[in-house]
Length: 349
Image 1 (cartoon, rainbow, N blue to C red):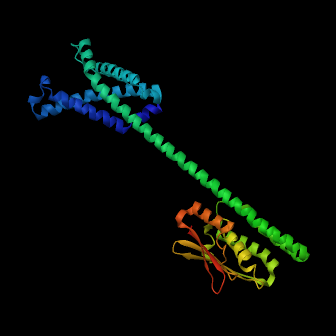
Image 2 (image 1 turned 180 degrees about the horizontal axis):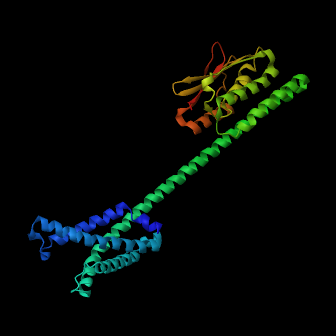
Image 3 (image 1 turned 90 degrees about the vertical axis):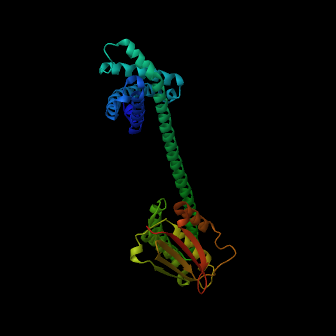
């Protein structure tokens, strides 16, 4: 029943009405019916009376054909024999319906009904063929929409899988480096090692719930970075100076997890860490038009031959491209008076 109701759309009924209107006009213009010479009023009245009869027959034929076509299924609608059966059955039922509503002269009886059937069989074939093409077009559109939805779902799944793989790549790279620092410090200064383990516990407590998240807030990311810098501060002592500048209105902004932490780790490992005197790291968040600009600047040794080609930076670029396309970017620039500034720009949300 639902499929039948779906088939009886306004487009299908408009097709039948247009077809019946043309049939009624043909009947009015036929000289044998004696309507043409009676004036415009007689022609209009004749057209309306025939239109009503033909519309009843057309809708009846459509419903009958639709029942047969739907019962045959999609494969049946592409079968000529099924279409022919639907045409014949529709004409038979339409003719009987015309007789039932009193639109067949009682004096003519069966002979007139046979005449009506034979005169409508060709027209009915055209009507059914037109409707079959209409159903096929609907089916093709539905298939196209279904295929598009499946493609979209597959692309979304592939994107999610890619992001999970990229993020999983960050976790061991980030954590193993930190654990290596803890082990090295415990071998040289047990007291400092215990303090670093405490800071590492704080870091892990903040990091682990967020590592599988799709996004996090800037405030949570800064808390994570602060915990990481607490670990590094114990290792480097006065050689490491840090400042964090993040305005309160920006702390609720949504950002991808672990990106800021990766930039800070790079600044420590490749920037200030290799210098005997150490250096300073400044983390700054600011609004630039409709974008969020995150900067991690260090006063370390500056650009080297391999700057910008590490795993962490490649991971960030890939994640930004997957999440935001061309609306986000990572760039490296020289810091003053020395060092490197890594800048992430992403849509503000």
